[in-house]
Image 1 (tube, rainbow, N blue to C red):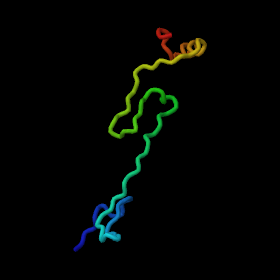
Image 2: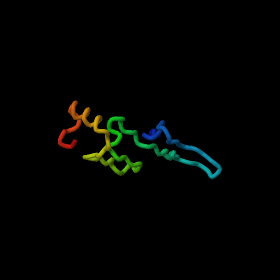
Image 3: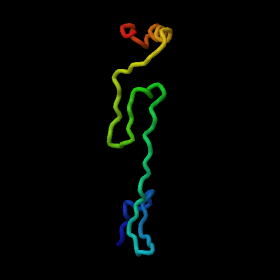
Image 4: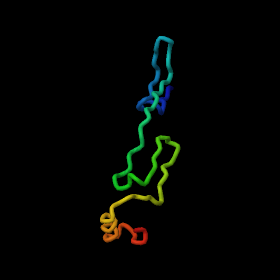
Length: 86
């Protein structure tokens, strides 16, 4: 009695092939590297994302931005910026 492999019918995995060198029992396609998804527009300046899949993104706890005084006053007025850091 022959059992079906749990890998059969999986994307990128092929069984029982043949080429000019002979039989191939199992062939696995190499995965293509893809970039991580981009952060949302509102958060794009806070994380540092690396293409290395084993390195976690680094999140900045503080960020300095140069702005016009009118922009800062508007952000303080709506409560986004702490007046202490103005």
